[in-house]
Image (cartoon, rainbow, N blue to C red; front, side):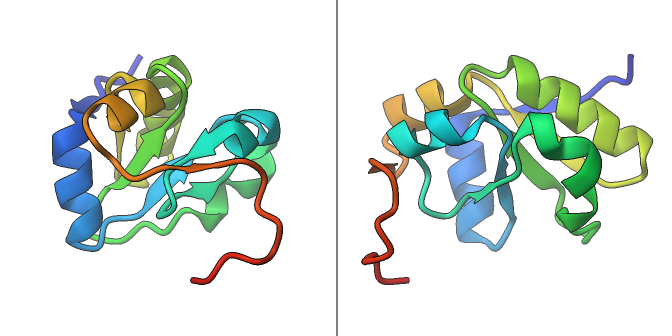
Length: 113
């Protein structure tokens, strides 16, 4: 198992504000309940097909799930594939507890971006 870097919700918010990409690997139903508005949904179940959407830029991709277990596995897989990635320790639970912005409910298409 590759050692992966875990970052706190505070660190994640700072990195996202600085331009890092946030990828949510939970499933659609979980995303519909609550998600970070800056995140891109790439469900773990579809990850094999979609991981190439994660950009191997200089800034490591931040991977988030519900509590940090799935994101750690995905970050390790990305690192092995040569894509820099870190896992958000505590997942969306910590992101929200730490004051991170969240959106609730399925997007109805009426959101402004």
